[in-house]
Image (cartoon, rainbow, N blue to C red):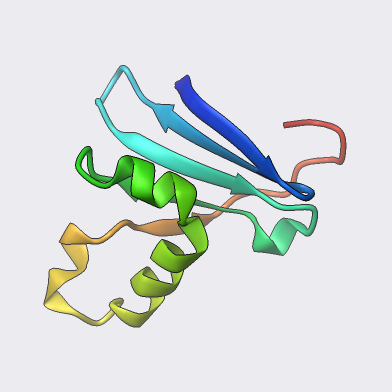
Length: 87
């Protein structure tokens, strides 16, 4: 994975990552509370928007989970717990 962009908002770390193996873009949100951490897959056309608004895209994904358009929306998954001080 190659980190393309990174930012912090309070104690939350957000990173835009690109996988060279399968050419996918992922936005990783690591919050101080592990259950609030997640990743979103992003399309090339919306990757920066997902990077700057990950919670909005995660909420959209939750609302659209039963929609047939789900494949076009970012998919969210919870991140495993990481000890504090490690990213």
